[in-house]
Image (cartoon, rainbow, N blue to C red; front, side):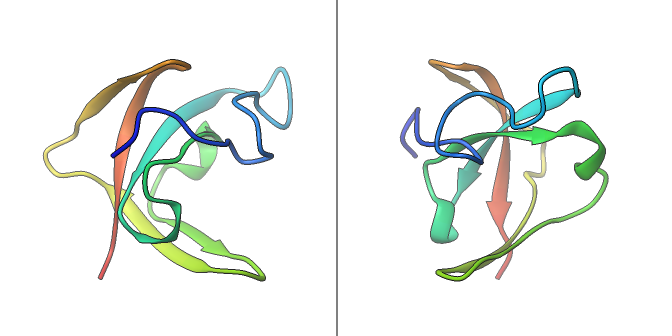
Length: 81
């Protein structure tokens, strides 16, 4: 897994300043190696990406892992197969 990559909006910055975000490092799937700020309230279950180019379902790694990145410590979420 690489240590950096575009965020949700192509940067490492949250889309909505002031809202709590968690850095997520994606392991496997269409977002492999990308680190993205994700709103904390979306991390209660699964992350489901349904975009025009790719789809992916990710779950928190078990056991939980933290990856140091240039943008800060990121939770590792792994693609579900």
